[in-house]
Picture 1 (tube, rainbow, N blue to C red):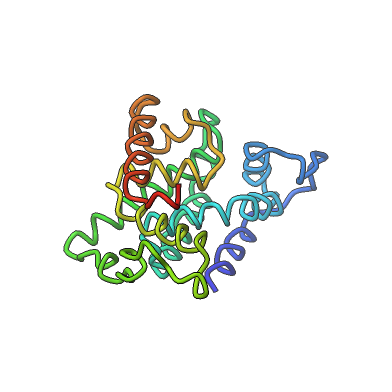
Picture 2 (cartoon, rainbow, N blue to C red):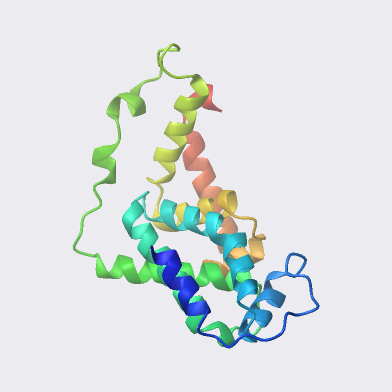
Length: 207
């Protein structure tokens, strides 16, 4: 399991006496500092704190391709381990983490330029086209959620990224703009366009 690989690497760092700072109460930047000084339990806390939301972000950016998401997810944490001392507190740890994830996603996208995205061919046409789903099969809420998830994946790349950052993470607009490597206003504009398209695409009963 790749998680074991990560934990094995953390154990190669020489340990020091536990810090008087409570691990659970420490913020991300303090945890990274502790980890840089050999406290592997600090890394465990960082990992557990961010793993779910980070994986969800990567998975959605990959159009729910699980195998690729797991690969990118592993690469991100390996990058954190190998470059932990390069963090300079110029931004939040979480912002730095998501910037790494975004860069890894871009790298994989460039490597896969000849591969066609077949996601849209896999969407259930009956679900997408049906405006009158049978109530005994699926609830209206379930249908609307499925529609929203499929439509998000059809957004232009930058708008999809903005929407996923907004709704799947707890970053501020400024931090999300940093992650997306753009300005505050440009990020807000991408988000507005994404929201408008989703409202236009969703049937009235879902709004």
